[in-house]
Length: 64
Image 1: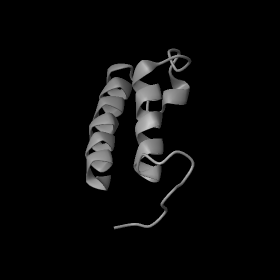
Image 2: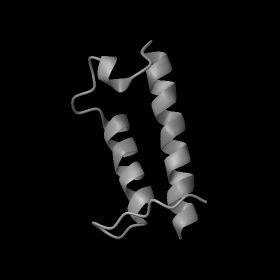
Image 3: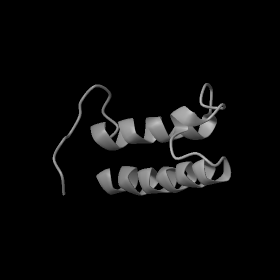
Image 4: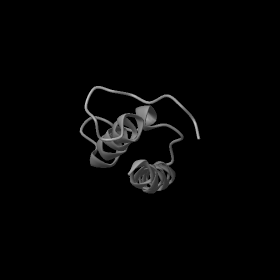
């Protein structure tokens, strides 16, 4: 199940990087659309899910 979260995170990373490239920024914080950005919010949620494996409030900091 953890691999599904990793795969989803990889997809969200690609989407985020593409958005940054399209907006000519190297960080979301430099983008005027950062507040309320669906791509960034989706990425942050995916990071959270990949760290806790879908278990709210518990994080796994082990690396593979």
